[in-house]
Every structure is written in C-alpha cells, then in structure tokens.
Image (cartoon, rainbow, N blue to C red; front, side):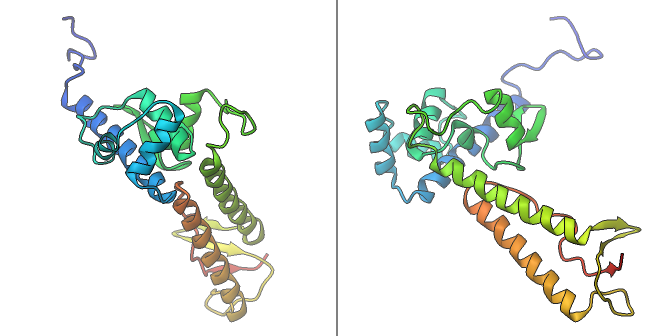
Length: 228
C-alpha cells in the first residue's frame, strides 16, 4: 500500500477511529428513535405496529436493540425511513438529532451542526408538507422548526432593543433607560431583563422538548448597562 499524508498509510474501515464514529452515529440514532417514540407516547409494540401498517414491519425486539445500540453499530437506511414515517418526523430527525445547533459528525473527521447536516444530506428542503407522500408524518418536525423560530424571534427582538455588546471582559447592554451609579440596571429595568431572560430559557426548553437543540446567547443574564 502506498504511503500518503506525510508517510502514514490510510486507515482501514475497521480502525478505532472508524469504529468509534460508527458507534456514535448508531447510538445517536437509537437515542433519537427512543426520544420520538416517548414523545408520541408509544410503546415499542405500538411503534412496531405502525411500521407494519406502513408496509415494512420492524419488530419490537429490533426496535429495542436499535434504542439500546445492540446491533454492532448497524444503521439500516430502510429502517431509518420507515421509523421516521412511523414517528412522524423526517429521516434527518433520527440520523442527525438535535436540530439546528447540536454538533454531529457526518464523517469520522467532519463535524457540523444538525441543520447543516440535514441540508447536506437532503440537498436542501426537498419535502412538501402538503404532499401525500409525507402526510401525516411530519407534524413533529414542523413543531420543532416552529419552536426554533419562536426562540430565534425572541432573541433577535431582545438584541434589537438592548443591543448587547462585548466590551472588555464583559457583556454590556445599551438602551434608553436609567441605571445605578455602579453601572447596573435600575430596579425596574432589571425586572424587565429578568422577564426576558426567563422567557428565552422557556423557549429554549420548549425547543429541546420538541427534539431540537440550541444554545442560550452568550449575553444571557447581563445586567451591566449604559445609556445611548
């Protein structure tokens, strides 16, 4: 075998790196199947029955093995498609769980966000929610995208109003409001800020509960302010 990359031979598919990646992807797949199944309040038997109705039966025992990652890192494409349909999500919700910001490895050496992975996998938005092919199996995915839109809208609204800025070693908010002598927000403003921060945490949790993932903004809980 010829040497490449500065004299090191290419790693075989059975390398520790390859095995670790396969294990990680199949484990994530199993976690996603279990997450959506519980989200829909389905037993493994009920999920199995749904796959039978779709036309490609997956047994309860197989579902249990998938969820506990007891199949030697195996991921079957046909099972991914059928389970996605049965769970009312897209295949990417199972393969790349944590839309939009959770980091996933699409290859052993390439990490991207779940949203970027989905775009890469599908080549863009390929489904139509009104298509007979997909209905009614996309309700969970639509909910996940809506919760992310709610979080993003609230975050952008806060940034437009308070203009958070990193100055020196801390975040500072700018706005037409009073402040104390120490540069802290006044009592009234502080109360308003806490309400905003509480709402952002609620929207983030709502998105996570819908099967997505997003980080809180770096400026969360900032109370240092200065006027315009």
